[in-house]
Image (cartoon, rainbow, N blue to C red; front, side, top):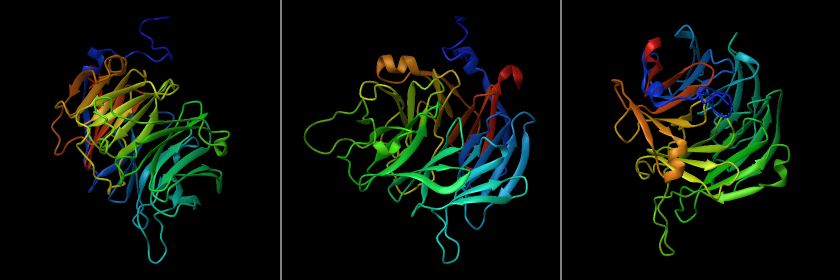
Length: 366
């Protein structure tokens, strides 16, 4: 096998290449915080959601804004492209309108004519996690109502529901083969109740989890007496492109890597202190870290070591039980970087600092 290729056939990213990423263009289009980032299947288009109630589509090849849409009445978060192309976007509502609550509704929008294709009703409270299957029309959502729901974008009826233990909130992730659903749960009000990773067969999710293990920080001192240290709010669960690991991100400056097949054995930690953010009131989190396409590196927002973006080598982190910072990537931003997303089709990634969006590409391409 070519040493320049990762096991999944994607070009390896070496330290020199990673260190060469520089800001290529900064967009100051939003008036409030950007809350989610997502690329379409082709990698050409990026969709962002913001607290200013806007959906913005960007052309990553041309390096320009492609389209702007607004959802003033319902709000917008967790915007996700489907496999029907860049003209179809799912997103979660964030606010009420009139006397009818809409925070529980997922909307399917045609960006071509700004028309809703369908609505997905079922959740009773705000949707906090929304992920689309990498292969088909299935998508999964989690809500503050204590449920995880499985949907088909072609049918507005819920296809299945997983009820969480009382007091739990969840984030979800789907593996690249659309076979395994990861549900990471956390009890914001009970530190003694450790976060838990549950794995479900997407084809038989009603049979219950086939694996369930607690998530812990390998640097914490867990003792029989007293409550254990509390992890920051968990914000997303992302399978690596090769499917071998799960990245569990938090609203703090620390994130966790778990082996997809042995969730009880491998727990690597990347980032800084795990107690940077224990605010469980803000539900509009996500995209604090992301996989590079080679499955061997992770980029993080606002790396605690001092960079605005941190790049970590995962194999070294697992071997040492901690993090291995490859490099820090800096640029002058008005606020710390809060969101990152790596484009797995093109050699670029994006970051968001409050309302500012930045495109990063290797220096020789700037």
